[in-house]
Amino acid sequence: MSSISDRLATLEAGAAIRELAPRYADAYARLDLDALVALYLPDVPLRRAADGTGESGRTALRGHFERATRGTAPGAGLATVILHTDNHVIDVTGPDTATGSVYCHVEVHRRDGSSYQQAVVYTDRYARHDGAWYFAAQREHDLLYGAAAHTRPNALPPANWPANQTGRGSLPEAWPSWNEFWDGAR
Amino acid sequence: MSDIESRLAALEAKEAIRQLVARYALALDSRNVPDLVELFVPDVQTGDGGVGREALATWFDAVLRPYTTTFHLIGGHVIDLVDEDHASGVLYCRPEHEVGDLWVVMPLQYWDRYERRDGRWLFKSRSVHAFYAADVLANPTTVPGRFQFPGNPLITKADLPERWESWQRFWQSSPTA
Image 1 (cartoon, each protein chain N blue to C red):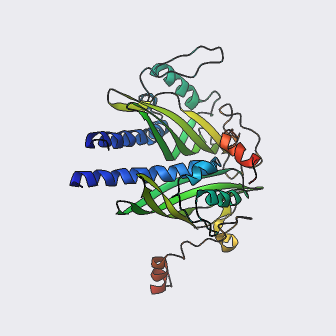
Image 2: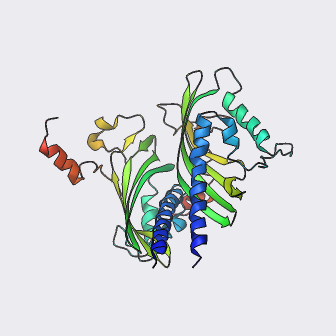
Image 3: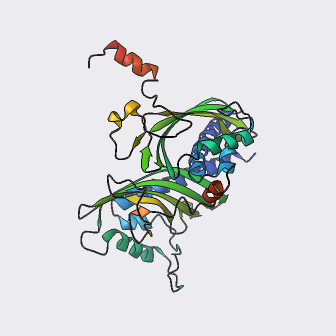
């Protein structure tokens, strides 16, 4: 069995990683974009653009969040953002690396008074840097559905998220096991 | 076992059990039955009298087909360690289910027993106790029996809060309020 010190370090890593999800939610709700990007590695690589170019770092990431929160049309910016997270699965993959997934029930009220709810699953990569744990990449956020208040998601068209906030998402069909389950009747 | 050892082991047990319930929800919602049954003890007893993970996979297969998309958002988790290898727990969950044209919300508690086998914490048993089941557009208090979940082969009624003895005692002592 590992030493007391190693076991304690594993528990501490799990506790630190678990806090990243509510810290992200809190910073997002307060629209504190500096606090939000501080949860990521300083040189975090961003998703590659369609033309294959890739940016990195917190400043570039902050620009991404700026566009997401202010919106592109008058009134489309975010007023109230409630990211209720739980179901944090954490797999430690090395002394300084881990992966995980987080469930989130999203409720957003836009500045124009419109609102929607979403069911989202984040898939994360984490890394330890100078003793603290950070998001090591932009969070993969897969949508099950987004729907306006008092709306059944069942018959909604595909959201093509993140282009649109409401509609059916890529989940559950994007889970390989989902398709295997329905393809194979026991 | 030293004092430090046992305190550390208790923290490790609770962390492992918290991971267990999160992995259950993900495996269930992604219909990953092979992963799901691996979370149970190898000699798990199924609801229909079977024993073992293969029997549990067959049991889950039938239970999981009458609805499509599900999203099991969990919440508060009480974990009571009984001894080094046994624990019990109560876990809140607010699952959503796509049931044909309905979108059924069913707030519930899981009543769990956990066991550690070969160093791994696993489910010994898990039972579901619903507060209600109702379409997202319905008022749960006006749904008959507070239960609207057509075709659910496993959960057929809402048994909380009435099932709690403390709840019964509370209202029996002064039923007027």
